[in-house]
Amino acid sequence: MNGTNALAGWGAWGLLFALLVASVVPEGVRPVVVPWHYVEHMLAFGMLGTTFAVAYRKQAVALIVGLTSFALIVELSQTILPTRHARWQDFVVNLVAVYAGLFVGRLLLKAPGFGRSRR
Image 1 (cartoon, rainbow, N blue to C red):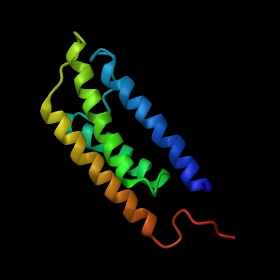
Image 2 (image 1 turned 180 degrees about the vertical axis):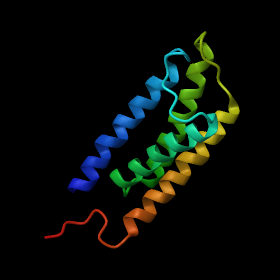
Image 3 (image 1 turned 120 degrees about the horizontal axis):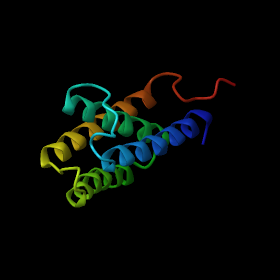
Image 4 (image 1 turned 120 degrees about the vertical axis):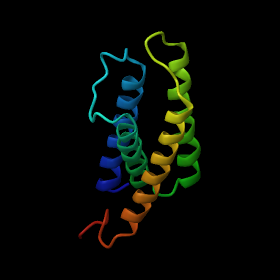
């Protein structure tokens, strides 16, 4: 794994952990990045898809299955939390965003010079 992929891997797993924590903490504790609920979901899950696509460039099927499962687990986990609420709309927005992020990541990998050693 070259340096770009390793950095993206650390970023992807860190972002996944941060999204998990932000999804299960009480709503008043969770940081609000932008005032529009679905834009926040699109940005977070889009970045997640992009970083995983760059980090694990040859694992497309595993990424789709894994990140779809993660989005589902995040929403389902909120059903048992008294201060949170699961919404199927959030799940759909998260999926659209993560798939868009995977697509953007694939495009970045095809960009000339992206993630390649300059030696």
